Figure 1 (cartoon, one colour):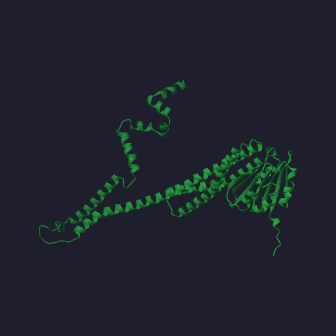
Figure 2 (tube, one colour):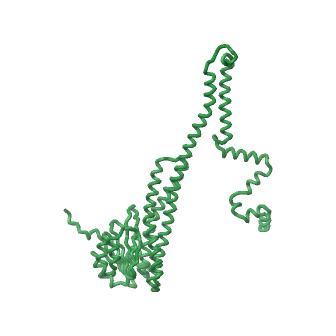
Figure 3 (cartoon, helix red, strand yellow):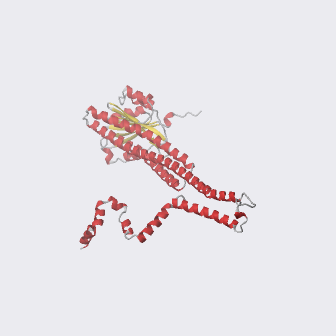
Length: 396
């Protein structure tokens, strides 16, 4: 058996603000990181590869975590949300990594300390923030814990955008394919996209509702401290970011449902088209079958009630001509009713004929584009001629 030390895959990194610089350190344990907090005005402790229960036991004293908050982190349901415990605010967000893996990130926010807990290892979306902190960004030198929390939360929200962009492109491709030719294989793929969008919604909707409730609760307390206002502003910004993503997810979910309806309608229309063609063929052959059946009875002999066409030298061409006449008449009738052919093409032909014989028909059609209908000024000017007069004045 290999003697693997669990601390080998754990990462405890600290960024501390001294007022003039941002100090970056790595520690072997969470206890060492909390012991150095007194050196800084405030600090961000980034923990990776450690369970929430173990982190809470190490941070409970250093951050004055109340028992209810500790129980929430240790035994609570793992889902996106937000809770407020006076000076401590706990926010849980679901993060989507570029590798396609999703994980939960816990934010523990106080006025002096911000802690992020990631139980999984293998990277996150905070690399850009870390690089700015290591580069001693002037903008971040004046930051506080609420601002760093806002930047990290925005980075988590930005992780949703590539996923939603890929889903949007897929839905557009599905729509174009369904318009051209419906395929039953697309139905499962659209269902899969819809399930994935519902999974994304499960990570955004509870968080958006919890942030809204917590923001209202903080505002009703009447706190006028600067840190309380800054925290409320940060939570409101995060709520707006989550709300924007939620709107996109709901729109794409509705689009996926629209594609399902489009597929079902297209399949139904295709079935109706097939039934219509088969019905037309059957109706055309019904009189032909009747004529062939009548003259195929072979009643011969003498008498006033026998078939004279059986002994007539033109009987066979007469029967064929009668069949052709019936079939042509039915085809013309179906074409007039619009059951076969393209009714829109015939409508264009009729419009061209009307423009040829009806004076002013072309002018009437040209004065009613959609832009004229939606714009009152242009339509009014075109009717009474004042638009042309105004243009003449401008040119003069």
